[in-house]
Image 1 (spheres, rainbow, N blue to C red):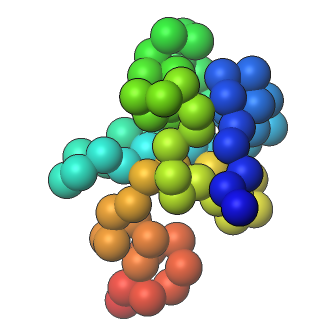
Image 2: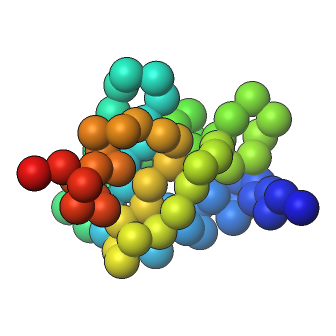
Image 3: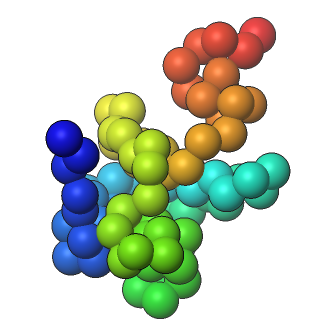
Length: 82
């Protein structure tokens, strides 16, 4: 069973994070939510997929929210890259 999270849930997760790393294909976008938060439309563009739900995979690691998959970003966060 999938845990689908829509627009409101995605925004709540984003507001609880200090940093968001959103990956889509080879591109990675980082948002510093405490010092330079993006506008809501920009944030949703990177968090939501075509169905209007939070893109997968999405996970919290401490105060960082990871959305989408990028091997290099995951390696840095989870210690796989030296």
